[in-house]
Image (cartoon, rainbow, N blue to C red; front, side, top):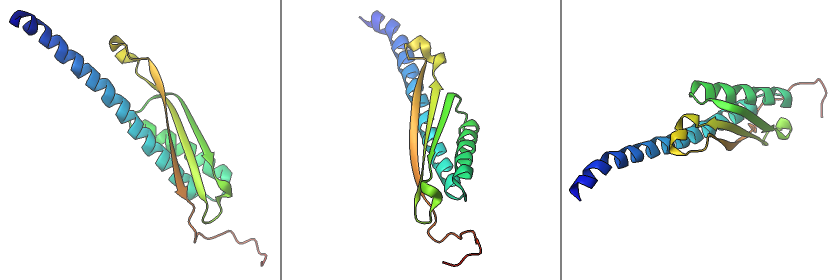
Length: 135
């Protein structure tokens, strides 16, 4: 009995380490995608036009994920600006297809699409563009 345990123990320890690494990579990717969504929503909320907000969200999410070391097979950034009215909200959803291909030896699927949504308020007291008309 002791011989079998001595032989099996290293394999069980390796299996636990591999499982821990895969779980950590999934959790780490989710945290980084949540952070990218938050940064993208914040960047979009300070823009003046919906077009600029959408571009800022896309750029900020891609930069945040890249600098965090997350490689997405496909990246999707969806932005809802609500017209960027003071007191309104901006919502950004970031979806990233994360590749776990190097963990295939454990029977882990090759990839998984992770998504995160963040909502940021548009500053209630933000200045508005002066169009020269009085209302």
